[in-house]
Image (tube, rainbow, N blue to C red):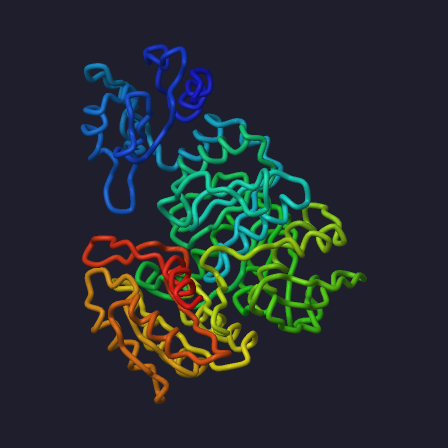
Length: 503
């Protein structure tokens, strides 16, 4: 609920409009949104310049739905005023888009009660880091939440977490972020982890959020259809450092891009590096061993050593884990308390999600970039005694330059390759697969099967005892997007069905 008092204070703080002319019901409003499709008569609709169009295009739609209050973004040199249309008040406010964060800070004062907000950015690992952070926070005795690709998850009764609501993007828009944080604060949630996508950062969705620490995981090729170059992509990631509330940067000392982060970080921000190869990093892991039930390694921090048993698969999950440890250490949590709760971490839906049957191992993973596919295949190799199969495709209408690279990665690290579709969108699966084939330089290709479920079944049926089958690209998603339509497809459920058929 948006109270009358806070709404009037927020409007007064960003405009010269005389609010005495404005009618605000005593009970306030139920919600605030940038999306006219979600409004109700008790909503506040905010119309600002979006990535494609200005929200003013949808003002008439909002009025038809009975909206009583609309905030409309106007130019810096235009006059501010209140426009009354039937039963709707439209406030014309200068530079509303730029002032929105400050407005929301006043509108939702309860977010100040959050103990710590952590944002994680990087090409790979964001979802895993966010969820590991929330799980560990719960095990440490805090109520926690994660916001990102999988939706909003709350960890208040279990480290498994319960889904609170869906998100339309990895990083929701600024209004959704503030309102979600306010709801979490009202629920007495202490720690919150947010996935910060390059799109979200570039579009200023996190500028005014009370982010205490930021984690940088890595930088590899992705989203060049949006950013156009790796330089612009990297710059978009680093621009999160402009957030005025950040007090700590946690960085991957093994990723070359970290040096650019360290050059741009301000003097009032603490830095903590984590590494698997650089012994001078503040936190590092060594003596790594891989078992069928997870990872073993020695964690070193300052003058302490801890022996960690982590129930996750893959070297990259050690990186994810170390980044979370670093964030908590910055918050003052004892290293030995962190060690005690590490055993309780659980895998993330669709992230190296393991199913075993008929002496075969099936891994469902979201890997859809060359680096992520490489890491997933290396992980599969490390944890299997037989050969590794990979089933994958590439998304249509997206970064085409990575397709042959993914073909090259698959031919280098897998023993058998099955190519199929993965959200072809407006492209044909055949044209996408043709691009992937340009990178496959050996005879490991076993089959091309456009129908993904059939491709999965072929790989599993063809695999021998002791083999591992990596199903890459879909992960947690429950659809395949073809020509603007999303057809239901749940790879995790498909694997479960196949496993039951083998039983």
